[in-house]
Image 1 (tube, helix red, strand yellow):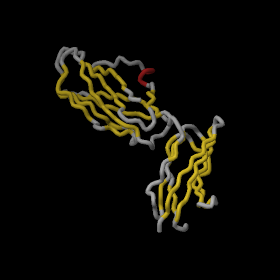
Image 2 (cartoon, rainbow, N blue to C red):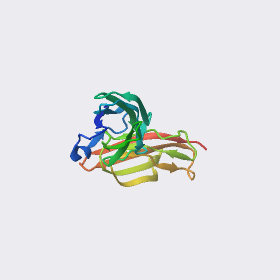
Image 3 (cartoon, rainbow, N blue to C red):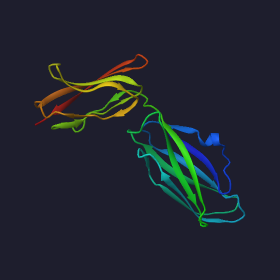
Image 4 (spheres, helix red, strand yellow):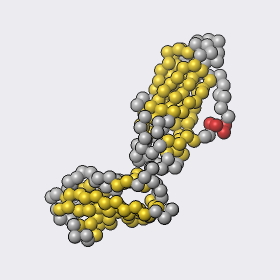
Length: 215
């Protein structure tokens, strides 16, 4: 889902109440094509020139295509838009409030600050990804995502069905995980890694994939 946030900024006053300023916007986990659209209005009788809208700070897992928009001029009583596009990295924290801070300046040296709060929704489904690299020697990363808080076990089995390694065994919150497995002490061959997730609402998910260790 693509989201558009429209925030109206006035150079002489802010129309938003404190309650609205503190509202956190939900954005979809690992989504692309997201947009923040800032509408900047000039309520004065003079033309404003060299208006700059830039991102002062934002979480590392928010990837913006550009962190600054320049507006040559805004005539009296006119509005101009500053559009920022971004994607959400899979390593974003789920369900935790974060802030994006914008700074607006004009040719008079005046500065305004606007903060937008966001919350990343949980993944829509459980998923186990193919390990990388594969084949590998001796390290590989096994990634997966959880749509709900769960009791998680990630085990490695040989082709005889014997458990040879325990990578994860415990409670984890919804989100994306990418633990590493070091197989330095294991023989070359095919292995199966299995993810078992028992969610807080009683659902059980079992996912398996094969990987190849070559020495």
